[in-house]
Length: 345
Image (cartoon, rainbow, N blue to C red):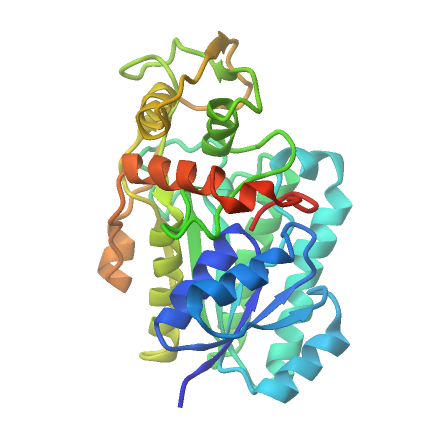
């Protein structure tokens, strides 16, 4: 019998790709999403992609009554938890909302899980917890540095889970800190396409290539890097989704809790990404060099060996493949749709 998984935030960018990976791996999955950061049309596209009806509950992670009802109905074996607010800049403007959704929502979920006897959870964390690290590639042992409320919520979430495990050995937790997700599913049915000005580099470049934005601002070209622009670790979202499946398998199989970075261990500069996107799209990507941003670091790359050692996780996709899949998605049939609140599918 297939193991049953609750996927919170499963209609979002990373969540939807993880849904496909979980279905492909043979799990029975129910999505919980309030569609704050996702388009409802993603449900139809997931059905088209997997060939199966999608089990979905439209509700907020803070709704304990609905959550308890879902656990009673489905008898979940584990949870993969994405549901959270995620924009760094917005978190500075609305810190209480971020603490409420990301921390109170997690606590509410854990209480319902505990009452239902479901004590296995994969937690979506972030390299944001490292702030400005002293060491790069950055290992999991790097100290916490909260640079904004969003980062603080991820630190708090990890601490809550670790203290829960320390108090009750029945809990098994996988904490995944990922760096810069990019790209889209090769089907071009799901991907990342924000309605407003994107926070992340690749969707911003995509909108410039598509003519929706005039130019890319490159924040600084005088760093100690090969071309002077900032270097980051970009991981294909399909590889990232695979990491969540491997994490879940470790929790359900050996009951092995873990904390790992999910990244490639290799960095690419802003101008390298621009060049790769130009190749993928066969379009120009105008850019303008501006002043450095406060808090930016020259190089931000994952030390990625622990994920391979613990989970057998290795990335498979290149930067060129990330850019090609992004362009295929951004110019696909979905581009004619109303993108919804933020357009992340």
